[in-house]
Image 1 (cartoon, rainbow, N blue to C red):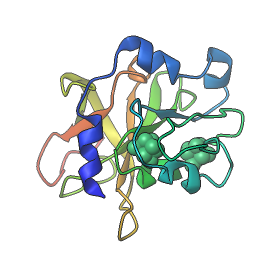
Image 2: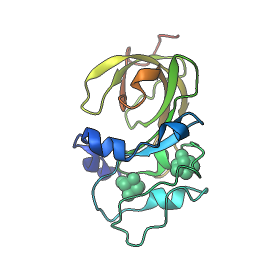
Image 3: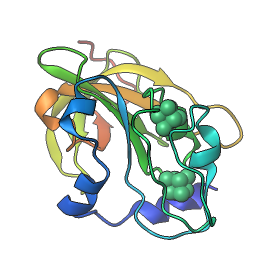
Image 4: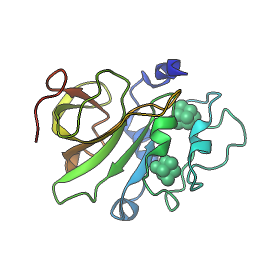
Length: 173
Ligand code: SF4
Ligand code: SF4
């Protein structure tokens, strides 16, 4: 159901994003999911993909997903399961200066570990530079590849896409 990308073509408002961001105390404890899905649509694989029960039971398939951050481990399984490419994982505890961000990525070729990338915001604007931390190619038939990025910590809630610096990825950091 790759057509779900249409669901994410709008850029959410600051208020919408804040409504999907856990409190500081939770952010300081480790990786957390950020579900940027704001429309009532008939879709629910995110709920079923989470084995920890962190994405609450839907009463209707049109419900907007709700997260229990106390149950979320930041594993990233739901990132690959979302056909709308609307789920991310952020880890602000990675280092003093860098965070990790898990991003669904459907373009080919996939970047490789260590590749330098341009960091893009929700509107596709470049906001800085980062590196590929690891790549999960995605399980057939529906799993979306997930690229975990290293990014400056202050961009943890800004970066939501990437662009390889060189096709095929030959830069290493
Ligand atoms: S990151 Fe893992 S634990 Fe958190 S909501 Fe997604 S699947 Fe569940
Ligand atoms: S799977 Fe993705 S698009 Fe579908 S309801 Fe969940 S977050 Fe929204």
